[in-house]
Length: 411
Image (cartoon, rainbow, N blue to C red; front, side, top):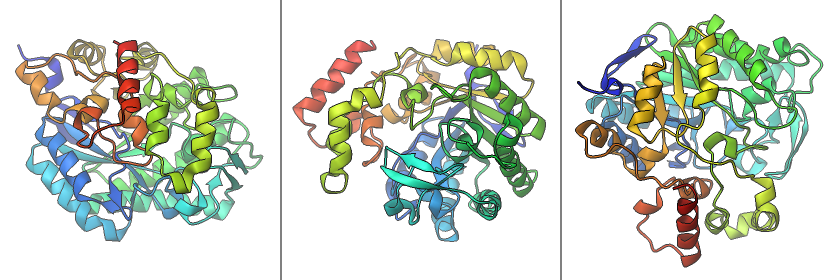
C-alpha cells in the first residue's frame, strides 16, 4: 500500500495531489521586490519534485512591510512574473501558495522607506532603529492592504494565500503583550489584541471568494517572557477557527527575541557574519561577534520538534491543521498524517534537495540527508537561501568547520 502522505487532501476549496507542502521559508530570491529567475527556477523545481503545494515566501502587503531587500512586494508590477511562476508550478501538477504579511517593527528605514511601524512605539535593537506606533487610520489602511494583496494573488494565479500571524511580525506584534502596550480598542485585553488579526482575516476571506484557500500561520507559544503562552495561543487559534479560515499552520517563536524557537538548533554565527555586507552592516557584525550567542540562543534540535505541542492543538480544535517543524523523516510524516493533520510543511529537506518528495515516493530515500547546521538560514539574511551542498563557490574553511561541527552535534 502507498504511504498515506501521498494521498490527496482538500484545504478549503482546493485539492492537493498529496499531503506535502513546501513551507513559507524566506528564499531571499527577489530582485527589486519582484520575482527573479532564481525564484522561478527554485519553486518550479520543487513542484517538479513532487510536492502537493509550494509556498512562495513572505510577500509584503505594502512597502512599509518589507524587512529585507530580497523580499517580494505585492504590487501590480509583480503580477506578470508571479503568473508565469504559478503557471509553471501548475504545469508540474502542484498547487501554488503565497505567504502575505507585514514585518511591523522588524525593519529599517533604508529597506521599508519610512520609520518602521509597530503596534506600539519603541526601539528595535536588531536594526537598530526606533519605530513608531500605528494610528487608527494607518491600521485601517493596512487591513485593506491585506485584502488587496489577496486580490493580486488571485490575479497572479495562486491557489492559496497564507497569512503570516506568527513569529513576531505585525499581526503577532498586535497579539503579543510584549509588543502591544496600547490602551485603545487595538490593545489591552487579549480580545482587543486579537482585533487587528480578526479584521485582516475577514478582509482576506472576503477578497478570496470561494475559489482560493486562506490559511493562517499562527504561534503555539512566543517563547519569551511577557510573550503569548500556550493557553493564549490556543484562544487565538479557536478565534481563527470561528472566523472560518481553511487551515492553520502551527508554529512558534518570536524573531526579535526567540528566533531559534522557530527552526530549532543553533544559529551558525560565523556563517551569519561572513555573508553580511561589511560596509552597510559592520555595526551588526560587531554586535553578533561580541554577543551573538546571548542574542540568539540555541534551542536543541530534534526531528518533528513541534509535534507534542501541536497535538494539544489538534485535540482542542476541529478545523484542518497543517503541521510544520522538523519534517525530514517519512516515519514522522506518516505519524503526523495519522494523528489527524490534513498536511505538513517542510523547508530544509527541500532546500537540500528539490526532488526530495519524489525520492520518498520511489523509496530512494526515507529521510532527508539535511544535517541541520542551519547554514541556509545563516546566509538567507543577505544571500539566497541555498544548502551548503548546493553552493558552487568554495566556502571558507571556518564556515566548513562550523557546518561540520553543528551537523555532528545534531546527528
